[in-house]
Length: 227
Ligand SMILES: Nc1ncnc2c1ncn2[C@@H]1O[C@H](COP(=O)(O)OP(=O)(O)O)[C@@H](O)[C@H]1O
Ligand SMILES: [Mg+2]
Image (cartoon, rainbow, N blue to C red; front, top):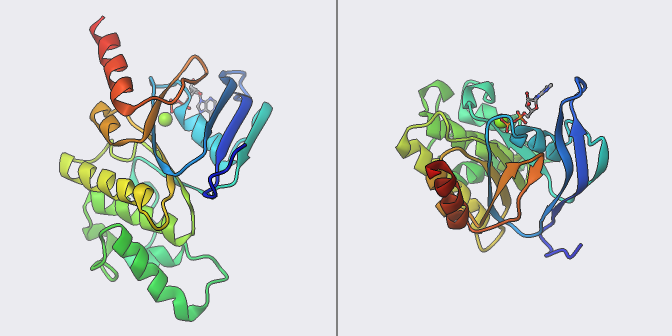
């Protein structure tokens, strides 16, 4: 595996069946070797969320191997299922690694909030945030925890178009920053989002297609829908 110095993720002939015998992933191989925004599309039940569980290590393959030098973090569809504390600051405190000195805490939290365009929100009660702001707070949690692989499972499905754009823009910025770009894998049903990615693939037939440009995958799915 050729590393870019930023870390990588590689699936080598990974297979996975749920204990009830449903085989979801079969001899699936792919890799991501540089930072960027990588999108996955696929029908309901095709195995996208299962792939994320395999990447994050919550479940293990029945056969094959997963190599991952990145530190993954999940962001779910519904931020209300992810955020636990009363304010942005207290929420982010939960994600700070244990070895961070007390004197650095506030700086770390404030700079994470700025990276997701929530710089003014340190003491804001979470219940007053919009859906898009809540998703960006979940992203700040991942940043604070020092994650460099965001696994976003339909993060905009419940958002209005304005919030949808705000989340997409922040993730785009984080994955293309010149100083310290991170890797994001983004599952979407909103095909217009494909135009923002650095590569896209279709999850089907118990595996994933080759990486292509987002516009190519958009065209393929549109022409399938018209058939
Ligand atoms: N915890 C589970 N136990 C058993 N089967 C599951 C579980 N989670 C998902 N599945 C099955 O695995 C398949 C893929 O599901 P999933 O990965 O959630 O698909 P997607 O995210 O693409 O909609 C489906 O057939 C689903 O019913
Ligand atoms: Mg899913």
